[in-house]
Image (cartoon, rainbow, N blue to C red; front, side):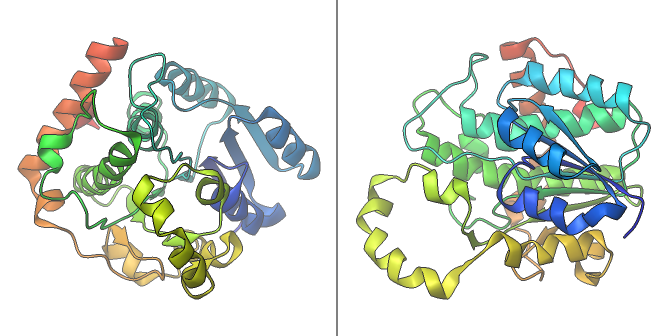
Length: 288
């Protein structure tokens, strides 16, 4: 892979940073993150990197990021979303969105739409790191989204993972062969999100068991990044014909809930409504 431009949202740490490092010096790497200190340090170390300091939990920042990218660049080959947050107690953004869903679904949908539809970028692939095929909450998803005010961030985060599946399947259906779309389940990776995230009570109780299992099931960002990077290189044939991808790069079966076109359209309508009501962003997501 040479002379490509990678946009990595959440690229200052973990999986996103590691994908950027694997791109080497022969590609341009654009990273987005909250930590100016980390981003600026990476830019100083790697001349082919650029950094945009943005908090992606705020949709106004997403709007300005898309505008900045359109002003500074004439093409982006890969849009890669890795930014996430793991909390237990509910936290809302200034704009009224639950923070984990704001970061891992609303900001991703809005940025993709702005770059592709409004500013005319034509990436060859859009990639989301999320828990593709998350088993819990599938049946109640259409009742759970949009996230209700009383819902904890733990449950909201799980709903957001299912929302990534539904959106990815919707987006691939709309874009067809113009852009490849992949939603990747990384499994358990030793990142800051996992190490520093807030765990719900039941997981804290089970933490001694998880500690014993970690050496068997946990991977490093360097180990896991081989999967998304092989997809970017076009070396994974499964990712060419399937949206949902497992931790080892295999197929994740679509659920009846997320693969339903009717559910997908309803989901997109609800995202549009939320952006309009909470943030006054009037946007036609189905028109991508």
